[in-house]
Length: 399
Ligand code: GDD
Ligand code: GTP
Image 1: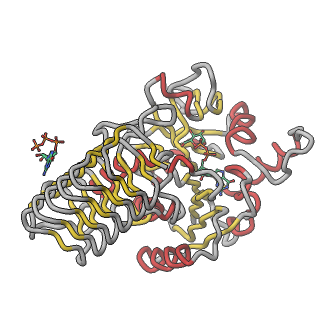
Image 2: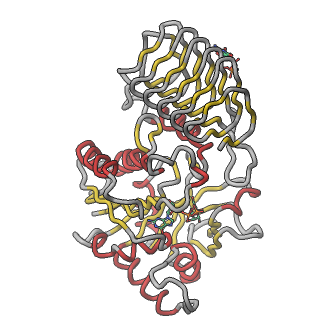
């Protein structure tokens, strides 16, 4: 018996994800036509299918749970994947482990042998069954999904020193300034339920809390992994499959490409009516001129109107936007209800892979209700909602 906890976080941060998260909580932002967390659920259920009995999915976060978008998402997912889902709301930010401790009764109810934790801002293949197998054969209390990254990028993540044969974690450091390992913590874990809460109890008794610090706050990384890595309690499962962190909105197109690839059969791909290249998804209510050419990796939302000769590749166009004749959209996200003039060009950087400290915005992103004038070029720029752009821009954030 297993459960899955997804840490969905809350509204206080997320400025790097603007303007996409301004109207919708980031975990519910549609990528490849489905809310981001839908992809976590879909990949996790697919991996566990027939290998473990998934009892419940718990979304823990501090977004307002009364927002009807959450209840709509939950009932859709329950119906589609036939698994109970609950949203558990924390009062505020209590760290990556705070919510897990606060809702320990909900996690322990029904006595699951194991529970998984996934960060909602990572996207990967979620190899949960492999994680389980590795966990069971290791005999450890905790298994962390790890991945090797180029050495100069490791400092942005939790770094793990792993025994080369046993894969036991020897040392854990959270975002260390100096290089300790090129194996990083991917933000996906498997815990043996009983020993997890015992370990938490132990480390809390032994830790000296800073005076004035929030007693409910708990960081899995610093407060648990760091101290228990020295007690031989952690196993690392190394994966070399697709993994990325979705911190800034600029990473959305990369995730989109991945989702279109893995879900090609499940998502309704468009085949005809206009020129199609590669994976293209079009809402049935969109109106697309037969001379337009779309793809690869394009998703077109409901009510979108696309004029003659338009070219779109590697982009997301959200509901009710209009793209006028001969415009070209490459590596961009067009928010809800935008209007793109004739012969306009929106473009981003094709191989954008910035993680955090890169200066470029990468892709071009238009917030809701943005209007772009005829014959203009908007390159690698982020545009906040309801702007009217009458000229051309490159590498800017337009507030
Ligand atoms: N519910 C809830 N409550 N979720 C939270 C909270 C909280 O108080 N704080 C963070 N989270 C969720 C975030 O939504 C995100 O999905 C995840 O926990 C990690 O968030 P950050 O605190 O921003 O950490 P990070 O992403 O910089 O680093 C973590 O993830 C990396 C992998 O992506 C660390 O675990 C690193 O070691 C790891 O490499
Ligand atoms: P291929 O034709 O696939 O070889 O494209 P490419 O290697 O030139 O790729 P690029 O990323 O530059 O453009 C992707 C697609 O958009 C290509 O099919 C281009 O023909 C098309 N494209 C590029 N710029 C424009 C433009 O300004 N207007 C229109 N309508 N299409 C454009």
